[in-house]
Amino acid sequence: MSEEKKEDVQLAADQKVKVFKKYIDDNKIQGFAFQDLKNEVHAGIFQSHLPIQGQNLPFMIILDDSVYTMIQIQVVSALVSKDRKDAVCTYLNTMNEQYRMLKYHADEQGNIFLSCCIPSGTDQFDPTLVIAILNQMQGHLNAVYPAMMEKLWAK
Image 1 (cartoon, rainbow, N blue to C red):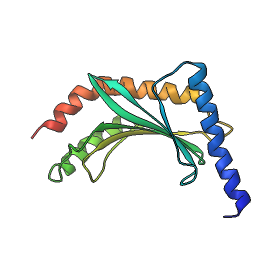
Image 2: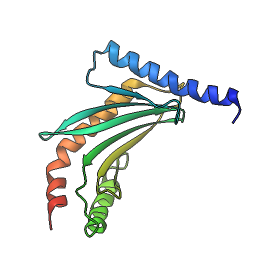
Image 3: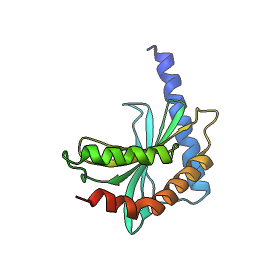
């Protein structure tokens, strides 16, 4: 990639980060930690926790040089054993079919994540929409979390 192209890519990520920082400052939204990954992957990550049914679930908002913004919430940590992974993934796929905008997945370490990918190139990036969708994800998890945890803990 040419130096000029690399600079344009970085500027796109920087612009989203700048707009998001201004939005959370202007709206006095606190609790975010910022990690700048521009030297590695041209991205900025805002991290915090969501209160869900008495738990504080970690989440991150990834702002990068792509035409997307990603919100990812870690629903459970190291809970899904290898012998239960197929059953858990079947359950998560059922959830994915019900809530098409949101996607659940389990990784190799037994964590479960809830993700939402928002189309938002530099010109279309809207921090109000990002926070609104994060709030919708929080409402969704508050509604399904007890039943989900019961299902995940079942033998």
